[in-house]
Length: 563
Image (tube, rainbow, N blue to C red):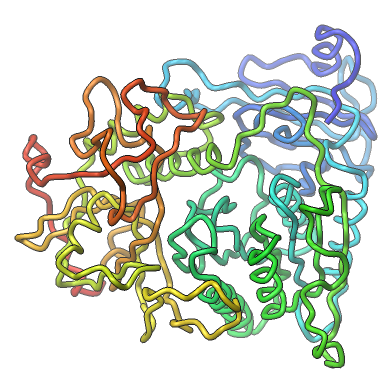
């Protein structure tokens, strides 16, 4: 997104055509004029109609925004040509009037005393994404609106890492919502999901546009499967089976509503080489989307093959409609622009999750950047928050990807692990894992259960067989959980300690993290750099004695009692 030329004062003068209100800033948009919106606040359309990152907003619309500055972070605001002209004092004739309002009370950065960046709008000359994207987005939205095929419109976004799949998926969702009341979103990227924490693939029904980074709009899914890792590499057949299970749920839910099937947007992982290409191909054969959008980096060694690469030769004679392949250039990064890395994005998602565990009504919109103060405050809040106490006799505990662990080691395995909470586990388990062979080999579990959320096991009392759990899901939903699954997920290092006092379960310079359900904790640029955390591996240790510091007793949650 290229900002308008001229001095900063010129840009500010151009922005503020309307006399400022003490609590807001109004902008009169001329036909064809565009702005880059960033910061935190509420954007209100006082008059006219505008397009905000693909979403069509009409008079009276109000949207909360948390957007970073820069070409890949700021939101593109432009007035449409529809509607009557507006006479604005000191501005002449405009076609839209937009008001930028701060949150009331003012929002502060999480864990910091400084106020969050105010919502600002700066003139720009382009949308911040390739022109080919805009053409393709308009054509896809028109195809969805005029779809007459027996199968619903579905678009699968593919490409290697860093090409802008998530950005394109958000734009497509916003475009589709401008023509339909709801859009289904199937998120198959378990490493950098759009609407949940890492380790899940999920199905959502969206009725509102998506603005900002993924951690700012996390929400409970309609249905989800716990993968337990940030990559499907550990069990490709189970991943393909889970993707097909969620797609079946999408079709079943749409049929049950006896209405027009909503359009479907599918986000995929950036693993498109070797076994990753086999997994992606298997998923595409299972789902058979009407459109496949490939974002090409321009490097053949990184991009997936051209054409319908997922089709098997013997399947070319099948009568099912062929998917339309749309190849587009990758999103270009701005010069000198700072973009969060994949580990940093995951850390921000875990930070938003930690805040939701402590306060269900906590807003993630105040997290523009995961600063050290943010993580330290969240870690301290987690340590002070009373967990749920669950009887191990009320749930089944399963370890994914490894069936050789003795049952007597289960308390140690659960200790300080990030777990998936499943309400209706299938009759078969995928805990045995599958060999990295054919992704379409029948998985050990065709029905992998609905994962309603993620939990952090804060401690395990092996003698009393009690599990101390921190989670952001509601009590009535937690009472329906029947299975706790342990994968290979790990929390950011900075969420495991806060302030001057070290968490009692965090021990540096240990041998390994094997058996804890978490991998080695690597240093991240977004996390606190501490001199005593130079070890590449950390072993979690926890004791129930920690809970004798004025926080007990806790009310136990009887999972056998249905709501």
